[in-house]
Amino acid sequence: MKTLKKLAVPLSIGILGAVLLSSCSVGIPKGATAVQNFDSKKYLGKWYEIARFDFRFEKNLNNTTAEYSDKSNGNIEVKNRGYDYVKNKWKESVGEAKFVNKPTEARLKVSFFKPIWAGYNVIDIDENYRYALVAGNNLDYLWILSREKTIPESYKQRFLEKAKSLGYKTENLIWVKHD
Image 1 (spheres, one colour):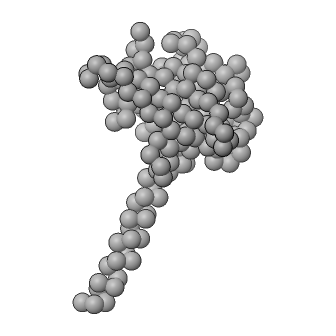
Image 2: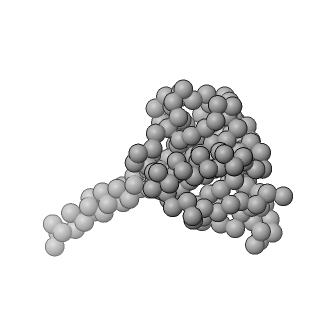
Image 3: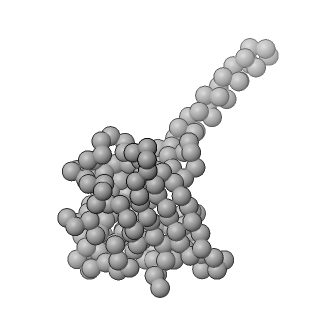
């Protein structure tokens, strides 16, 4: 019995550690590649969320935006905002993003609840940094972003085709309403 107790504590700590590490996944979906020669300065500023998969942090939100700005430590501040149309109130979350590898590769990790980090991968962007396709660490997270409240049909189709080719179920996207 004593031996069992001696094993139970380290085993429990090991399992807890594995669960925590798996919740901090900063990967990229299989087959996806992050934008190379990425210019984070051009990416800064306000983006409108055009489409996303539904998940609990953005449940019932419209008028959603993401605003990115430089932090003094070299990382990027992330301010997400949206209007909860069920509760009739604005919701805002402030987090931090940092590059996984180098600043010229659009592979970042973002945290709103440290020490938990998640993948944030810009996998397609137009040359003027007006429209972007962003993938999480797996096929459960995808965002289409625009500097405006709408997106041209050509970019919408380009991003949808790319997402489908990676295995995303784009028919499940929520198309965000903006007033």
